[in-house]
Image 1 (cartoon, helix red, strand yellow):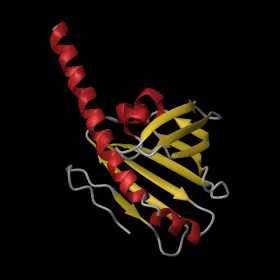
Image 2 (cartoon, one colour; image 1 turned 30 degrees about the vertical axis):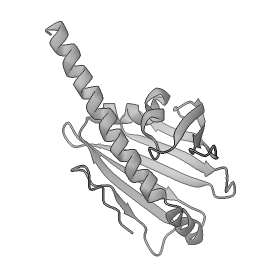
Image 3 (cartoon, one colour; image 1 turned 60 degrees about the vertical axis):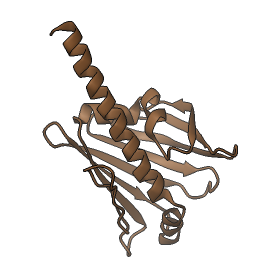
Length: 177
């Protein structure tokens, strides 16, 4: 399966190997690894981009360090809440995040996720790989509409990164440095 983000020049690719219980998500961003990594690990930024626009997000905890954990809740317009939690197994600044991911509506479906941040000279490629318990669990995740949430979240992250760069340029111009 492959999904394309048509509103931005960067394309979100979602690939499911038919023989493995994995989903690989590849996306490039117009920002350096430090900035993209921070957007993945700073709860004040995560809440601004993770997931589809129609959901609001509450972070109960987000300790993005090796051995840390997280829990957040997405809330739909009708009040329905979707909880997620996991543990950060390895957090290597600007390089790599390894974590577990559990949707609380399906607590037996724990996946292991790895995100690698690749420096493309002022741009960043993030390659995420999710390993599930089975191909059936992977297919269930794909059928859940996760591709829509991932793509829309990446659009929101593009907007956030763009506004951070604009603010940085504005601050630079104001100080004259």
